[in-house]
Length: 449
Image (cartoon, rainbow, N blue to C red; front, side, top):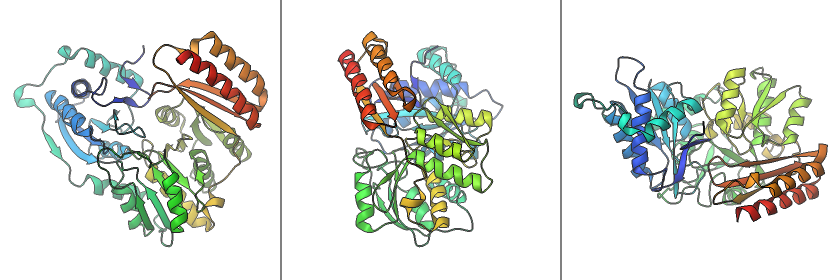
């Protein structure tokens, strides 16, 4: 059964338009709250966090009203990274965690991510059950007046997460002598990320740390890294760290201002953990987007690369089922489940920094483990219809696969969070890859209008 509201990473859309209206947020609170209030005879509680978008002031009280109406106590923690909400859900023995964020999207968008009592994102089946409640609010049993929930604010939530993040860093190490630029994307980590790095004795240059409700991900953060890269060179820093709006994604640049993507960072962490006897599962779990060069690098070390569908939730599901402790995405989501139940950009950065400190060499050397195959990714926006079912598009994809043959691969898919068709090509010959991708994009654009 197809989900109506939930995509690959929660509910997401333009603020004040379906599905991101106050009315739907209210119903999400009612439906999710009722789903998670049958676990025992005690006061049920939900933790709600958010990023820095203006629309958070609309979504947060609507969700709160929904949860309170079915008898759940609400713990409000304000702007904090998505992984902090997952951590606090477990730490506070809450029944549910909610993060109000559209991640790397612009301020106009917002979203709702839900975590179960174990700190992991909900399964497709549970999301479907919640959707049934959203569409049938009259069937939801409301609490009696004396059983209504209460809403309180947890004042030390930020400090709890700061200590949690620091505890993931080796106790016998500090970042003394390391000059770090950290771009917080004017988002959820604007306070905690610079604080963690500073308390570990790094020389910290913070940027993207002055949110105003509108500037989240605006020419800053992991999806817009030019300013960070320039600042690293200007300041003579050892590296730059860029997070996205909800800080579950990480991109790094070296001392020369050159970017290092998630594939390289996962290669570094996986190899380091394998050498130290910490790696579980015999390799790394990533998605179909990861570079063929990463796969070859791991194979040369006797390690596996297991690919899943795009979306960190699918990575995490495979990790849990098969006993892996390192996973992630090329885009910068990295899940290190020895520490966290979901992607955590700050904790992943600390693991990378630990290797850099140990190596004592420039970041440009330490963080580039393999030569990636040339990869081209282009997006085509569409309004309606099913462009990938067009005979012309199908024919173009088949022709492209024939041209790449055994020297490369194609991946064409619909985005789970935006109305986009993503066309990715990868192979040994960049000219052939560009030609194939352009031909497919041309056919998709004709159908998409």
